[in-house]
Length: 124
Image 1 (cartoon, one colour):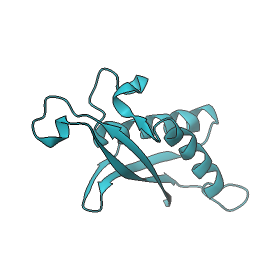
Image 2: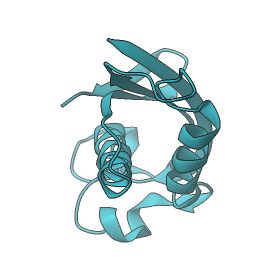
Image 3: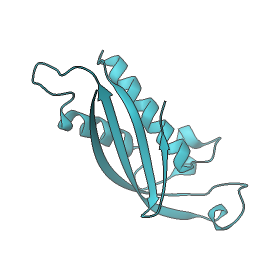
Image 4: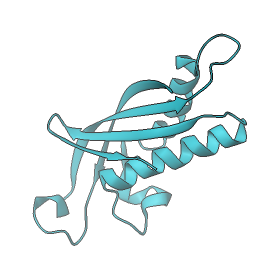
């Protein structure tokens, strides 16, 4: 099994409703996102996936979140835009992209860091 991992940061604000504490107030993070893709076979270029392609697709997803008030982003309008939800959103979007392109790859994990010492990971 091969794995390829990329990292990208974005900045955004959010409010987490009904959880208690300061996070119910408007606040922001410089999120760091790590995406790991896995597969068993290399392509004709002897790559699992070209870093440039994976970065491009991840950037397209994060561009919808960067410098936004996440509570107003359509996908989060009815749910808390928690790091857990952000990780799942990124996972779902990348998997859909792979399916559209008929790539035999899987997103093995998406990790979203809110700070240097707080992170969540989504795996399927």
